[in-house]
Length: 171
Image (cartoon, rainbow, N blue to C red; front, side):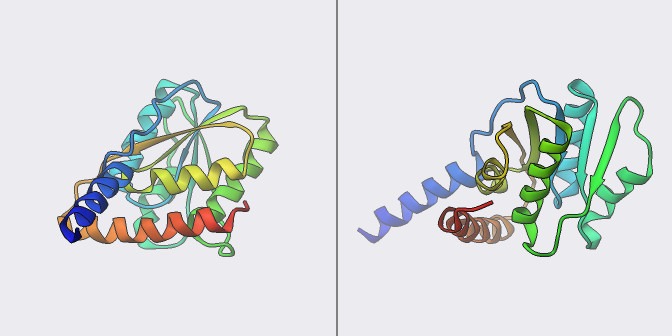
């Protein structure tokens, strides 16, 4: 019984956080780059924004890991309109980003957005952002190259974060 339960837990974790079946990119009014994991997320977000709407929205919270994202705000990118925001500290993290995204969607009358994050973060980001907007939200995942130990930490973090997102229920 214990081995079967462990196998099920591993299978669910791999499906939810490693290969989440992210949405295929569709038409959108803006591509939104969530904070963190710049090596994976930034190139994907730039490509999608250039191929699509020409609008890239960048989340720029404090922290050294987000220095590359902040640099996008300071360096013009040919063919792209870049808009940057610093998410609030309360609520922190993805929940704060989701609230700002909801406000931006309303302010600019966007009907569809593409959100770029990492594969381990697709489920939670999708739940939180969809709660904060009526726009069509497509979540696209970059798959980071990480050690098994780092994947394990990310999966544990996301299990907890996803459970909290489901329980808390508001934007």
